[in-house]
Image 1 (cartoon, rainbow, N blue to C red):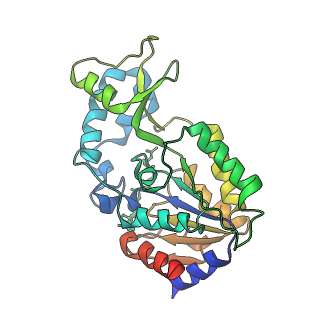
Image 2: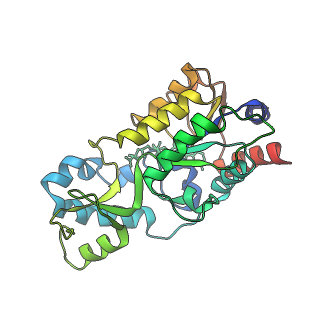
Length: 280
Ligand code: OAD
């Protein structure tokens, strides 16, 4: 079937990249953005733009607290789909995970030990491409999986002026205590360390993601509606530079026509099956 074909392609590939969206975390209890039960049904996307943050940081942070509660309030753990990707990585079948998610769940499953800074991750991505898997053979599988968080990480807040990063929980506590907006010692305003609508993606991270897409032999998009640019262009970019594109998602996406393999199944079923096909 199509998962067997996908496993064959991965087996033969030198560089395999997984590209994930909110659908991979939905089974962990984190709501998706679009589709049934998506947070954009309950909240107005327009309240969370970069323009609003600049114009009205007080109102932005008040609304942000509510959004945070709706998305992450119940607490959540990685699920078997995150774990399957981590297992594929440890076995040398997965070179990078490029995620649009800000929930930090991939990081919790990767065998990294010390959390890495974005800069270190970016350097890792470069190393993988230049010296790692491109020149490695199948018997020489590199066991480190690069993680790129394209849209940032909601567990951090960043000062909009001096870029100092703090635990987002600190910022939220200050807001809850009436410090509106939460302010850095330098006088700058803290912003959730995520890419807001109307804000540019960090240039270096996006470039790394694009080179990973170009260099990949298999590019596997998982749990994303593939509608939010520029991230949504990565699967098509990978396909147009020769990668086998696979898509695992419950609903159809605008990139399905570019994919060799479209698999419609819950990620918690599909990814463990893929893991079994490759590792057992
Ligand atoms: P979306 O909410 O747009 O899409 C999630 C996709 O996952 C949908 O197409 C669902 O069909 C699918 N899905 C849901 N549960 C699934 C499951 N258990 N198994 C398989 N598929 C499932 O999320 P993203 O594509 O990640 O931006 O959204 C992209 C960006 O839009 C987000 O990163 C966020 C948002 O606004 C920022 O935060 C900057």
